[in-house]
Image (cartoon, rainbow, N blue to C red; front, side, top):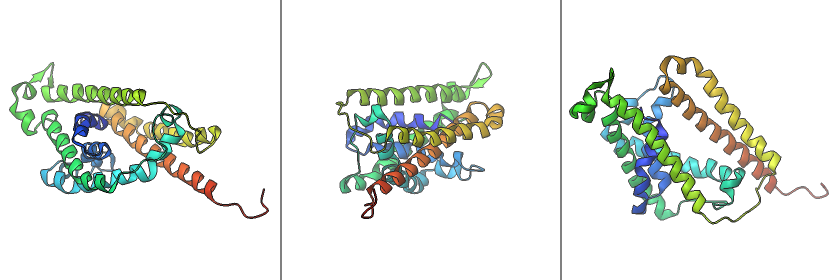
Length: 246
């Protein structure tokens, strides 16, 4: 598979349609959800046309909700270079939420089409001669998968860095202290390291796929840990102290 986050590269231009970018990205990545679950159940299901119109939309909508409810504000606050360039809080409007299903369908469709050209046995991979032929002992579809995955990741990283760099800088203080911010990031880093380490044997046997799966698993877990810790700290800071307590 192309490294799952690389799928976001295809939907970046679709933002010009007025669709929520978060929903486009979620739709473009959720078909690979089974890859990160034990036993990888339902992989073919999430890559089917009916799932693009139904199941993938539900998964993407949940991912968008989770992003704004748990992750987005936390990372915007504890990451200095990002914090000074984005609003402290961001949510989708009611109108944008009505567009989430449309964006999710388009995103999921780009994922399925991409995979059809980069997975052996899929329609496009079997139809296009170069993709169906071996080159240096490896199927063209596999070469396309590796190349498109790397290119897609580079596009996503370049787009993100360029977008942030062009945003006006408005320094603001973090809602948590600097030591506490590092403390919040530490568990996330530990989760990533632990996940990759536990998957090390699998990565050795399955190469880049194992490493990519472990990396995404770690990233998702890290985001959840950091988000949960940050929200807990901020919520406690909001509580009024009892009278007479210094």
